[in-house]
Image 1: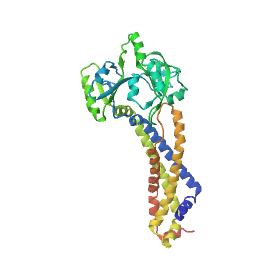
Image 2: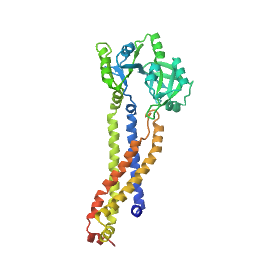
Image 3: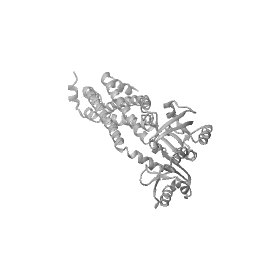
Image 4: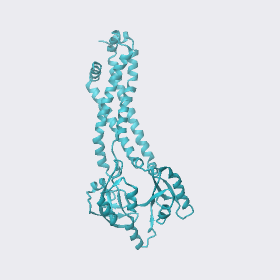
Length: 385
């Protein structure tokens, strides 16, 4: 207890300098936590991917369609438990700035394959009955103040026209990682209109979602599906849901690398700041350490005093930065809206912030400890005024 009081008094001997250093550490840890949370958000779709779900798309490109007739053939493949399909609709709500993911699909099987999208039994029943109905995530509904029964008009971009939907339910995510900013509707509603217009897009979808009976069958089932359509006009490429999501993430590799680089640069800067503070403190106390040595204090105890002061400053700053990161994350989430649908600070990020404070405290004290321990007693006593 006496040693702790001594370390605190040493740290507070120059209150302004200590305060500014602690504040610098707090800002650095805050920045690191936010940057890492943005990176985590980019990988949120990967984290919730199921090992029993496969995605089958056109082998040429994701934007090329597949015939709806493939569905029954895929269902007959050994190891396949259920099959659904979806289409990236690309509809615009009121204004192009109101971007959110909107998909058409076979909703009954979709909800069976994705139990993480939770609807009340009543809402689910109403949604399945009405082809013009749609469901929206809780965050999306909150953003636009939607409620059950509201009529929503999406302006088609990929599929031109004004498409009217009725909200029949607001889904919630089973887990925190589930995206609650999506909009789902019956593809049959759009497909029927395409048939009336004699469009070549009728009876075509964007991708199939294949549920398999066991994760270890993923490679085998994928090969079976692709070989089935190998010589067809629309050849397929089947991969795990995780690989499919990673394909989207890989498009932003340069951004993710830049964010990671910035987060580590922040750590290096704060290391320099703390090292400078501890170095100044040690240089001012060389005379005191010389007196300690004459009283029998060894190098280990002198080094412990310097290291302890460094760790106190970095730990307090780190804890302050972590505490501030929560309201900062909430404010950031409000600003970005549906652009980053899943954004929260994880336990791993908090532990990383604390770990960084310890590492910075250790590294920043290495040179000051060396000076404090190696400076001869006579030279140290000369600095006493």
